Image (cartoon, rainbow, N blue to C red):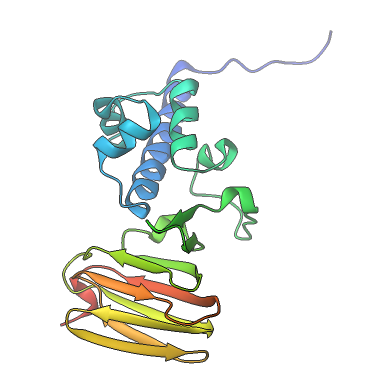
Length: 206
């Protein structure tokens, strides 16, 4: 067989592996925070030791494929998306339904679809929100100064924030401090649909 083969330099391979692991660690951390999971909770759901997850997030270890698979299953992301290795991905990104994580409220009547970009999850999150009649989404406070914007597309939703209760109908938006316990309820007889954007960190308010 004719032709030339290129010998891979060991240093190049190590640097490449380190770059992939570093991106993977950042991806795991962003997803974990998007789900509001602690290291212990992710460890319990994935079966991966808390210390190993911490080392992966800090880019201190190279995880096995089995470990990556367990974490991807626990974080509800397909493994090919999970393994996206560099920051030089195409500008046009197509996510299938299987690639889009979904959260459910404790009563099972509210669904939050994470439509935001994973790389902004530490300061900007946005969701598609659907609530069945009687559905209630109870959330603990985010970082001090955080603000949430709820834009109702159909139906009617009530927001409880502190001692304040406000209701919005289709075409209306509610903005409120979400650094304290807050609740979104569908008190109507029809499903309600909204978009939700959460601006995190104290920088959003002076």
